[in-house]
Image (cartoon, rainbow, N blue to C red; front, top):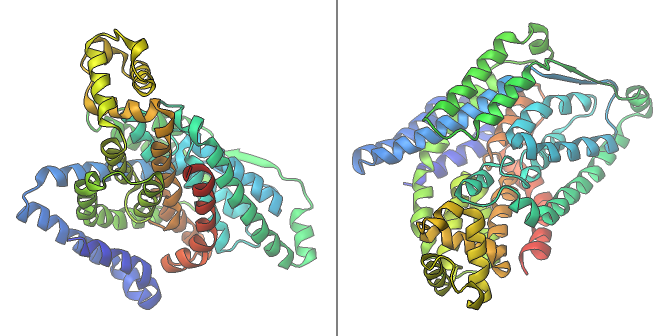
Amino acid sequence: MILPFVVLLALIALAPLWFAGFWGKHYPKVTLALGGITLGYYLLSLQAYGRVVHTGVEYLSFIALIGSLYVVAGGIHIRVKGEATPFGNVVFLAIGAAVSNVLGTTGASMLLVRPWLRMNRYRVTEYHVVFFIFIVSNVGGCLTPIGDPPLFLGYLKGVPFWWVVEHCWGAWVAAVGILLGMFWVVDYRNFLRAPRKVREAQTKEPEHWKFEGLSNVFFLAVILGSVFVERPAFLREALMVAAAVGSYFTTRKSVHEANAFNFHPIKEVAILFVGIFATMMPALDWLQGNAGKLGEPTVSFYYWGSGTLSSVLDNAPTYLSFLSAALGGAVPADVVTQVQALVQAGGSGLASVPEPVRATYEALVRQYPAEVTGKTVGVEEIQLAVLLGVPRLNGYLVAISLGAVFFGANTYIGNGPNFMVKAIADQQEVRTPGFVGYVLKYALPFMLPMLVVVWWFFVRG
């Protein structure tokens, strides 16, 4: 039953090359038909109604976030006077990487992609779009739970808000720095190809930023704040939709026109991802069912394993699957048993227990004080506290976090904003690579070396 997912991926990758006309006209029917096959299997054969409803809710949350950010960002017009030099572009992308940790990769992408394309308009090409996806839409959002969905799920599981930045900042600096360096080389060569008179005419005036539609910052704040709303059900999505509606009807028409705003990109993403969410259920379920059978693999396995699957599957459930595997396979059972006894004893005898047990208990008290006091701490909470509290085991959580976030840049479907950025660029008639070209021309020669460097210096040890 994983076959419909594989077929859909193959069509997204190859159909625009082999039969673009047919695909452009009929991709909604094909996508929904493939999704229907999987849904039929789950509903009629397995009668797994709860699983289908769960996937539907996940899709609703996904499209509510993507769609509302798209609408609100479409009401903010950022204009730059003059054109960007290679150095100016590097600064812009570096700022975008930092902003991704505040607005999330999706919010930063929707807000910054249009000014990015405009400021490079006289020489924009496909690598401008790709490196924007690499840096702003993925790698940049690695420092906070707001930055990327997998990290937010980790936060909900009990990973402290600032734990990721404390343990992953070095890898973030290295990854962003390597990608910015690669981009500067490519962009500088492109810059020199433009005739000198054109370059001088376009860059002689200093950059002057102008913002229009700033009232939409309020709606943006509503969307970001609603991410933390868990109850009641669907209130979060309702707030996002309300913010989008409010933004759309209060934004001046001239701002929408300046952004060339319409609903075609979000429509395309909504259709393709409803098929992706439906057809990838068997793959995710297989991963969830077999993650606990991994035994005791190395930290490197968790990095490359979670990363590789995050390149083609939703990186959020992939993160959770590998986190569950690490909790079961990397955490010593004797430490869990001793911590359970320590909790039941109210912490009595803490000074005499081994260091890993003491470190775990202290992490447990910091993260779940009420549960420790009430002696209601579960095994999963203790296992997570082991990963957080024992320094030699921190690497497992670091590996899963970096793998889920960084590898999402390897394909258009690795992370939600990727396809959205491509759709906006296509709408503005900016050349973008196809699915296969994206992987072969950019992900392998640029992302892969960076991922190897991060693994070698920040994961392997």
